[in-house]
Length: 239
Length: 294
Image (cartoon, rainbow over all chains, first blue to last red; front, top):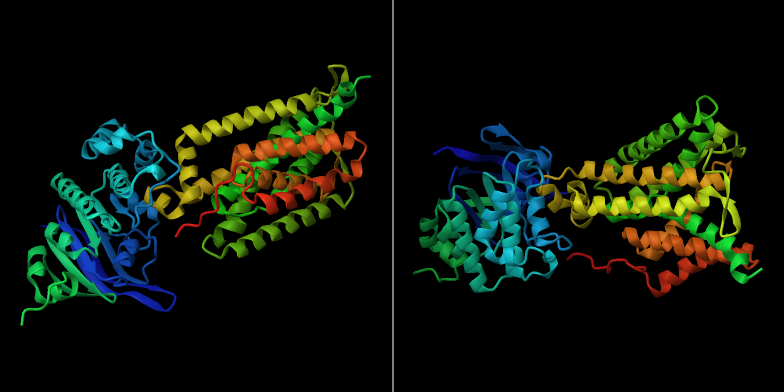
């Protein structure tokens, strides 16, 4: 299977502090890939550098074979990559419908079909389409953030901790949606601290620790891995 | 003569001045809304717009000079942003503010160089400078036109912001730059648009202002600029309706104070008002609550 996104020897630093150290990984088309790791492992920095919200210090990011590292964010987004940011970041003063429309900001074609698609995925958003996004609950805001990202018709949707701060039942809903989006052919790059849920949903998993990728495997393999179990799944190593 | 007849000219003047302040204040409040920057150069852009008319009317008819002035003023606002503010986008807010002060002095000193420091006579613009009678009060036609034009322009602006794509992008960008970029919004175009609108309204404001106050000096932008800024703070900086209402209140109050015979205190009133607002209600009439994102 061909890789839609390929990251090679990526380095990101903030001032003198290296957040991402020489990592390489790839995302095959049509699969769910997850980066798991603790706080500060460099997961968010990796995603943010892919869409140029932080400039990579060095390294290469290939999207469908073309170099995109350091391009302006709007150009990267227009090529079909989107990021659901950490903490949802919906536009609280815009209505739900406007939030969805702004997700399709670059597109010039009709949006009716996409709006219908997103409202079918998230019926709750349709009920509340006129409401200001700031009045939604955390789970609804997460749905909106995902819906907004889908409105750009992305080929790759990256999600930064979509389960953060949500009740377990809502988290389950979020992962159901991730599977549903995946089924519809969108490639997904997911980063999560909730390693258990993420690995169950993922085809491929990478484990990040202090800026480096320390382990790779299929989701199922990593779930069974003793070190992963001990460090991220809260299960003691079998002696 | 009844009280009303005595004071009507002042009230009319107040509404008119309020409209002029409003057109300038929108430039302050929109730029603040999106960049969190007090654009100190805004009053000077207003002054340059005045000088442009003074000089261009010497070589071309006024109906060419005025559109040209509007275009050049808009261009100036755009260039100032690109040259003096855009390179500092990721710098601390204080740096960009100091850059704005620098642009302000630059424009004033360029104007000083060009004018030689002498007050330049603003040409009388036909029709709007004509004298008319309103309810028995004698005034220039511009006094009546200003508030009407202001309200029409503000209404158009509000519609633009509420119902167009670029308006939606402006509202989004004023809340969250980063996420706006993730939507594919070109943040620099949005900021440029804001400066273009602000400068356009300042250009119209200067046309109306100088029809009443005929002398253009290099520092003439400072006072209306400051008052418009107070109006923007009074209304709640970042809020367009707030700036407009604040501007009309200040314009009317100033002129009523003049009408009562306390002309000397009319400026003091405005700045005293600024202090009181900052003490009592720092967010202004319609300002958003100061909640910093965590």
